[in-house]
Amino acid sequence: MIEPRKPNAAFDFNAAAGGAFQTLGGKDFVMRLWFWMSAVLAVVFIVTVPVFIGGYGAVLEQSWLSNRALLSGNEPPDPEAMFSAFGKIIPGMLLFTLGMWVVVAAGETALYRRYFHNLEAPKQPLRFGRKEFRTMVCQLSVWLLVFLVYTLGIFSVAIVAGIFSAISPVLAGILVLIAVIALFAMFIFIPIRLAPAAALSMQRDKTHVLAAGKVTKHRFWNLFVAYLVTYVGGYIGYYIIYMISVGIATGDMGFLMAVSGLGEDNPRALFDAAAERMKGPIGMTLGILAMIVNAAALSAWVLLVAGVNCYAVRWWTEDNPVPSFD
Image (cartoon, rainbow, N blue to C red; front, side, top):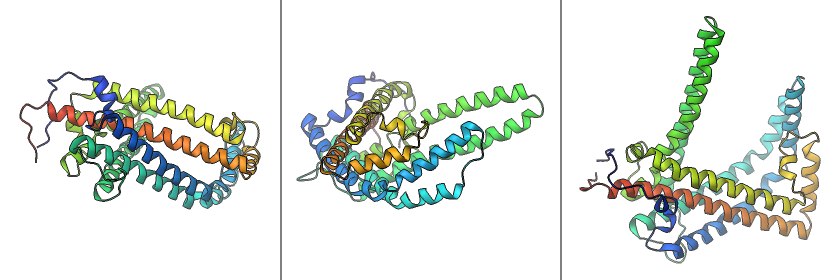
């Protein structure tokens, strides 16, 4: 049975943050996995991004118009225009998201397979089958639970605010502030408590989601530090690489800021100009290189975070003097 227990072994930050390197394959394996994951993810980007990128300028324009209307207090533009623009890119965006998700699940599963069972697929480590699909199910379940808690929390806050506003607006404001802080805390607490779900499922060859919370119980704050460094630190590193690569590919280092929808100028003109430049051989080459670099950076970030998942499960398992399994 999976039961929570207080840790006896000391937390090892280096083993947690560097969990991806702790397989018997060591650095050679994780570098091989990183290479293949980056390569396949780059193919996904190169194939799917052109499917929706042509209509993305219209979405940016509608978002910019909505933001301008909101900030100026004017009537928002016709929502049908936004729905129409967004509807045109949905198929491509879904293809892009699904492809990326499949590669990420395959990469994580390959790491878990080597970490817990010292197994690796021949020729190249990425595969997609029952175990990879199970990893996707675990990932989806965790984030659906987070979304459910968030949604219920929002409804609860709205109800409480409505009730207490009739009694005391000041009290209602205080309660809403406390509730918002609590919701933010839950956004951190639940993902960390359930983060090792896919790793635990791989170790035991059985789907576990909520049981991951028993593995991380009494170990939250130590794991919080490891996830803070790998997830937040990794995201910052990835986003810096993303901004630089996109800036070089588009020929404008302020491109991302300009197309955020908060600038003074309509971002569609800038986006269309960048898209036109990338139709040429040099622009197209830079665009492909940017996608390859981003795929490599994203793969490294995913594997670092997955390494903490591995450590969390191993810490719980090996910390039991008499391990018991279902």
